Image (cartoon, rainbow, N blue to C red):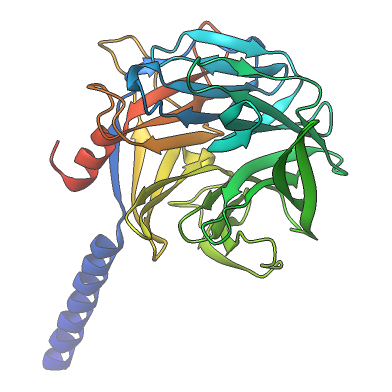
Length: 353
């Protein structure tokens, strides 16, 4: 009886050890980084700042621009120092995205788009990369049939060179428009529509692979085709689990590397972290938090909505790329956006810092 008991105890101890080893092996790396800059506060108080997009100036990196939405009043343009460059009071714009090289009669422009919940469509803006002037007029608008345009992103097809705007209603209705220049401004043709069937806001398209990623606030991250003939078939590649991925899943952005590598990054609002998924396998490899920078008196980032990353050399402070995130709480002022060096994130991920 004693021998049997010892065997059982040893077996139990072995099972516990294996379980602990398995748990350790399955833990996802979590690390902290600090913001280097914060923007001026949004014009509106309470829940106002929402999404951002980053344009790397190929001619003068130090004159790059960041676009940020105030979802109660309009679109901001910021410099790398976080100072306001311009503001367009176009209404309740929610999500923003951009693509370079949009040909117009006046030459190539950077096309910026934002879902507009006041006008029920997509507000468009043109950035002249030579003068850095951003323009918007009544002709730069796409009307939709959505009751509440919510999520928004753009896709430039590697197959055809066509440019598309994707907008998702808060009720889950999905619309995709082909965008082309016209004498009246920009022509938009509806090329795909379906009911997503859930609350989906954050989205990002990989122009290299033709893959569209959509953040379902309560369920996780979907992967589907970005081409207009891709239909509505989709796959849930990352599911809300209440641990690493805690609802709501908000903004999505990409750090492309090579033909199909790099990372997909998701804002996990429920635990104020950011999830890193390796590409092309969409495997969760790490999470990070953005903590306070005491030296620069910049507060920590919590409850993030939108995020945007552009990879490239922005100068000494951002030699590998710039990540911009919305911050839910900005003590003593309205919400704003924080800037984080992509190099800092990679160094922490790889254990070199």
